[in-house]
Every structure is written in C-alpha cells, then in structure tokens.
Length: 81
Image (cartoon, rainbow, N blue to C red; front, top):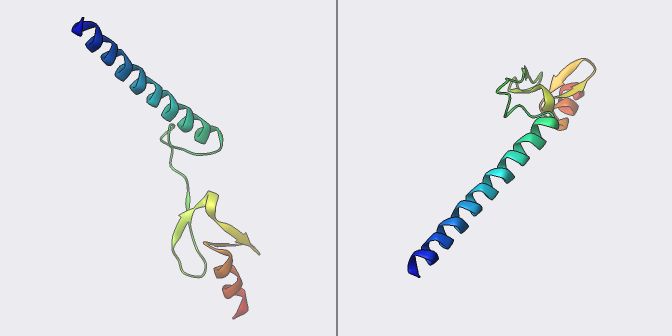
C-alpha cells in the first residue's frame, strides 16, 4: 500500500514540473510573438542616446527630430540648450 502512495506522489511531482515547463514555454512564445528575442537568440540593435551616449535597445529608443534618446527627459533636455 505504501508503494501506491509513493507512486501517486511521484506522479503529482512530475505533473507539477510538466505544468510549470508548459507555462514557461507559453510565456516565452508569447514574448517572441510580441517582438522579444529570447527564443530565437537574435540580438537587437543597440543605439546610443544623443544626450548621455548610453546604448539602449532599438525597441526602447525614443526618436525625436531624427535623433535617438534613452528617455523622454533626455530628448527634452537635448533640445532645450
């Protein structure tokens, strides 16, 4: 009888692990479809901020008057000089 209990416990653990991996895979696929690059392993182009010269991913860059900035604040400061 105790071996049935151990078998049931092992099956529950395996089911929990499989469920967790399915959730993680679903999240990664959802991010990939939304433009993320985690599953494909591709690199996103990095652009320098015109104000502070810190490199940021192209998807997070703020463009204003043909220049690239890391934040809205830096875009305002750059053009206020």
